[in-house]
Image (cartoon, rainbow, N blue to C red):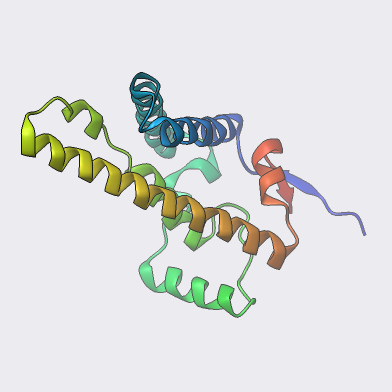
Length: 169
C-alpha cells in the first residue's frame, strides 16, 4: 500500500528552521573567541525570531501558532503517552513540539546589546546571557530527542519533512 504525502511545512518555515539552526550554531561556537561573528549571528537569530513571530500569526495553517497551542493538561498527557510509546500522531506540531517552538523562539533576546555596561552590571548581563544560551542549548537537545522519538514511534522521517515540507498523510 502506497502512502500519500501532504504538504505540511511551507518554504518560509523550512528556510527559517535551517537558518535558525545555522545562526544558533555559529553564535554558540563563536561565543568566546569571535565576538563580532557571535554578535552578528545573535542578531540573525533575533531577526529570524521576529520574522517567525509574524509568520506565526499570518502564515500557512501549520505555521500558525493557533495550530499548535495546546493546554498544559494536553501537553502533559501527550508526553505521558509518548513515554509509553502510544502517543497520537499529529500532522503539524504535536503538543510537546508546540511547547518547544515557544521555548526556542520566545527564549531569544538581544542581551548582547546591553554589553559595554560597567563593572558588576556587565557581569550580570554576561552571566544572564550565558545562562539563557545554555538553556537554549538544552531546549535544542530536548527538541532533537523529541524529533528522533516521534520519528521512530510513527515511522515518519521528520528531518526529511523539514527539508521537503512533506509528511505522510
